[in-house]
Length: 468
Ligand code: TRP
Image (spheres, rainbow, N blue to C red):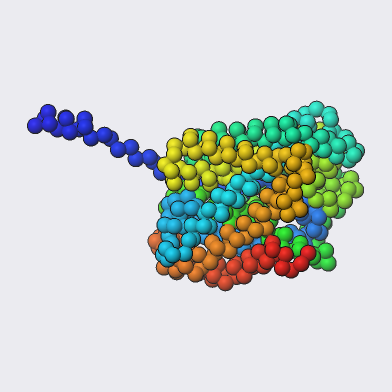
């Protein structure tokens, strides 16, 4: 008897059940999610867009979009991810009650968007790294914009350097993703976010204590609505998507790592407010300094790499603050890129049962290939312009103005019109454990009626229906 049992034991292979990936608790959830939201969107996109579109008035519209579009979409995505306990593509399949309609396309769009965004995002992150190195020396420490402009031109027009910085960034992110959700993403963002915030506050203090800083503060907080054109309003809505990492499944995949006890609406609100605060701090780091030296803020995308160095070169202790500034920009980019790489990686693991290692290598490798198109946009491929845009600009445009809004619209329609109130109430009240039915009702109403309408407007703008 004993012997037969032993034999049976020896023959039955132990089934290895992989432990599901999870963030470790409320702090882990919030820091990792905030780490995804905070990124170059706050440091690079928000200030240059606010600068080019009139400052305070743009900020107000952006805040409205974040509240009425961003927050509902984020809650929706967390809800889908946690309820289905699956990454973006499978989550929508699992919850889909009408199998004839391919709601999984939301996730598939998401994986595509992750590639497009990473292609240009890693390049900008690469520039930031190059600027960390440069700011340690003296080559960009000059008040002459012609010199900083030429320095930026040298970087982007050098194909090998562009590829090297991009692949370096991808390798760095890949190594963290290999460590898993709690051990890689959560651990890294928990280290990075406090440092990032501390450094940002230092730069804000420096900027606000400059003579003439008040003009910049006014620019950011005193609205002049005459500057607010139709396209600017629509740009603000697109920025809300990009900023909160919504509309493509990042937040769905992250939601699948949330514990059952997490209060989804409350956490999403905290992340949204945290991200907004970082954008405002970035504005306070940049505009007072820019105005103090009499520079026009309306310079768009070149703000970070051409204007900012001249501003630092003008101020007392500017050299130290320039290093700090580019370091913090890279730290911000890190958590965002982790979340972008996690989406296709989690998909490969779930779809093909690849090991995390194999999936990461495949994703990082293929991102390197797609990213090359963006990296070489200002050199070898400068004249290749599908739809009149370089690959870099095309990827930026396609993701923010087309794919994210389409994804966001589909997500809120899925939540508001397909899933049904019962499932949503159960999911967001944690089966009645949370006493937040009022909040959930308000969420359901906005998600059903308000958000889809607003998102539709962003989309139509993406397709040029309102003209230029
Ligand atoms: N939110 C990040 C930023 O502001 C970028 C980002 C990360 C993102 N993941 C995303 C944007 C998913 C859209 C979708 O820099």
